[in-house]
Image (cartoon, rainbow, N blue to C red; front, side):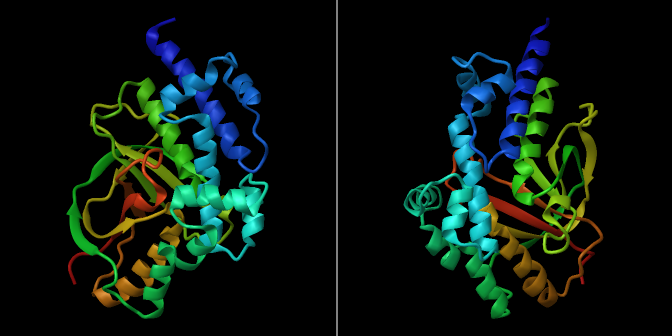
Length: 286
């Protein structure tokens, strides 16, 4: 077996672990079971995971569970105790401590005054100047992509798979840019049917084959909203951008999807310091 085949085998094993974790986030996750799924020794698999994924499996599960909890706090009226239980915490106190470590505020404070609240207030006040939007003209970019269906909060599952596919092909750029393209309105239709795509710009010479799909990001004029904060709060940013900024801007949206460019790494950056550029395609100058 060649070195590349061996690497591909390890990546495939850890992809199966990722699939299981995303499918069982609200269940009790046995690390011995994950070792079985990875077909690796219980003595070594978690170290291999940490080395190849850049964070421990414990950190991955905790990050994903708290990210989902933040989405429920920001975008639903579910009881905080119930949200904590669904995130795997046996008491409101332990959930509160873990959430504050990740988001720098308690669950109750986050629900009341997270960045989603600032966008909501700006929407209510029809404040079209409350957040930084710049007009930019971008060149068309060729990307490799992996499709995702389901909650937009879980597009990082497709991101991980895309990165793995490119790594096997030794085609990861020196400075990879992770991009999410979103095709549906999350306020319409069931969450499990939402369509999105994880993308990464690649050179012309890179072959894009299954399960990847070739995607050309439209060139032209965009409104770029520079957003800092948890991914869970971005629904409020979209509502402000489309419901307040756009009607007062003098621009018309173009017939192309919005995309997000992720500027730092959620594995190493606190949730409230995550930086994302949201790009709304526009028709030519008014």
